Image (tube, rainbow, N blue to C red; front, side, top):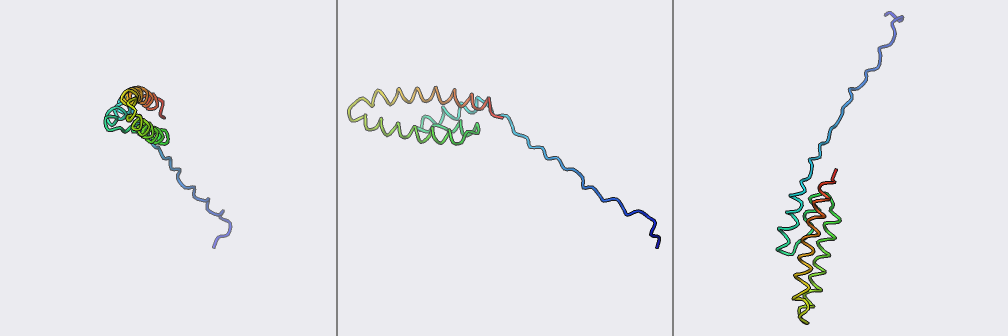
Length: 106
């Protein structure tokens, strides 16, 4: 054996680069996911679609709390005015907010 040869060079592992593609969220879809389920008293799905799960769940359960309060107010007849007004305000604000969230989602 020839002991004058240098030891072999260590083998470098190949670098692996992972690319993760996040599809851009559509503001229109986020707004529709707020408006369409609103007819069934469900808000927050557009926010969940946009990636704001906690905001969507808080909006969903918060709306149900508002519904419970308005249901009690139905017995004193004020609920017949407050429930539709709250619903209209929630549809407008939550759909605009969800569209804005989807537009700014990274």
